[in-house]
Length: 411
Image (tube, rainbow, N blue to C red; front, side, top):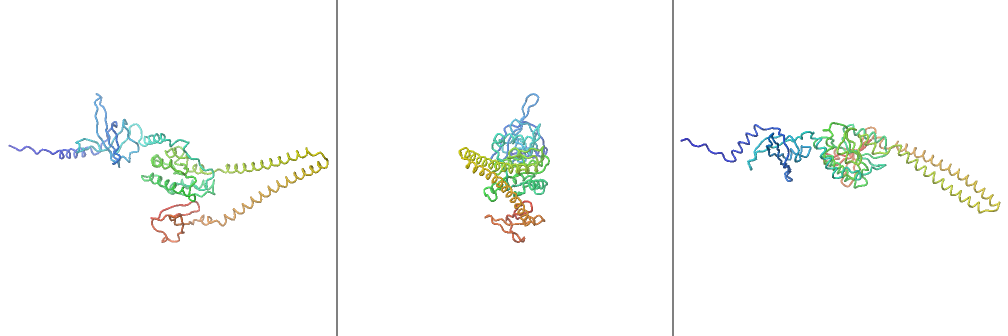
């Protein structure tokens, strides 16, 4: 009599079935409706079910999970009732003997993944009031220090600096180098904005307005500026931010939460600075106020003089008043000519002084391609770097160029 085959243990049969499943269904796409979606706060993994119904109304349900690392690459937020395609492998969860899908990727049905992610984040931030015009900060009219956060290798930084130099050359410009695309770009931008806001606590380093920009590109290229971490960093900034991302037709979440949206990086530089017309209007307005004040004063004097004349009855006093009137008129013309002459002399002197200052400005040296590098310590003290041995890894450096400054860390 032959012996009966040895029975499987539970662990053995589960392992055998798991091996067969994972071999034959190593990568499958499964379409279904999401139900029971939950995310474990501790592990970051998500658990859900996929279900559908056949023509007879019979329901089929498949358990599924997606690990934290894979879930972090899903741009949208999976929700119950959403139809999607889950890509992954079929396996067995031995502890419960449950047949399940271990998903690696999720793709929504009927709409692109990035478009859906954009819509979901837009709805979320709008509900929090981050798009409300009332919470947005007003841009300074005449900024003394302008920050530019962008890539230092693209055309955007050149366009921005050229326009700033053309429109408002008296402003100090500080450049903050950031990556504008890639997996780590969003966290790097958020960290840079946090650092800029720390600097804002020191009046000597405070940025009056910040341009956050990059040139045009595809939706994927610009996606960094649709990440929630960047949007929240922009919204929480105490420094007013102008978003100049992409071209006119591009629109990002960053544009919606920023204090001002610009159509292009160049347009961002325009919005950050006053126009020549605005400056001229300000000067003309001041001159008109001065003229009006002088006219009102002279009219008051003439009124007083007329009243005095009315009270005087004697001809001799009338003659004196007439003489006084002529003296007032003469003095008025002399005063007017004197004021005009003084203003013209001051204008010529200021122009001469400006030319002399420009001739001896250190920026003339920098304009010939030289730069000045200084070590910055925690106390704010600066030390000029003459040799590579003057710096140590980890030290912060500030390089002054003819146009702008670059802050870097020695590695």
